[in-house]
Length: 318
Image 1 (cartoon, rainbow, N blue to C red):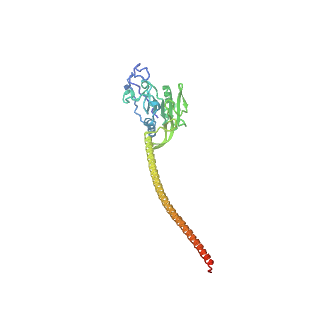
Image 2: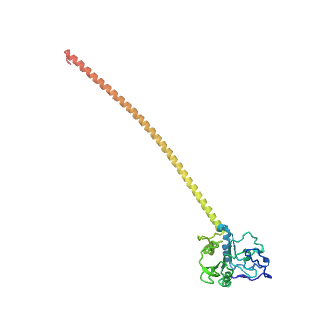
Image 3: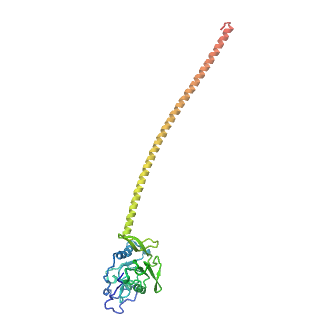
């Protein structure tokens, strides 16, 4: 953006007051350093963009191996107490202390000699040509030896390329095509969508697999959607279970009816068998009676022939 540097040096600089040990306790009175120039962001888009570049990191990102980090927007970056500060639109620094009181003078800005390192990634958003992001600022961050410098020229004020990444090669920045910053484990890319109700193309952090780091609102919405989906799935499962229960009940009733029908068929078969048994017995009895009648008839015929023979012997004609 247009404002690029806090041009107020520390009051009454005293030579030799800076600690020589990196990351050690500063011996400079940081309360006398001007850390705020009071300049606001220049438009609504950038205001939301800077929040999108910082808030999701704190809301949903968990760096590997429990690493710590801090992300800032429009905070002064002081390399030494006697030099004016730069105010990057956004910067991210890994493996820094997070258990400090940010209201204390030593922690209000990014004091390199106190924190012990420069930021890993610095992002500048180009709103117009006045910021000199591709010249003065780039040279400054190169001199500070910030590993990666990201230039987001969303209005194409400086070139036809919207997003450019520069990484230190030796002592100079060289444009690179890094998809993920190795020091961080994240990358930056353009993303079209809605953030806080506003549809636009945004610069966003993304994971190595390409998925963006969700904002708190997106994470909550995703959780709600997952909960809604889970509830719908649970309702569907309950409905399926009820349908299965009803089908099982219908099958049980059908099975019971089939058992009853089978029992009735068994009873009918038993009755038929008994009727057949009775009929068989009656048939056998009729055969016996018929045989007895035949035998009686035969005996009667024999007796008749015997009597006739006797009459013939007596000379009695028929």
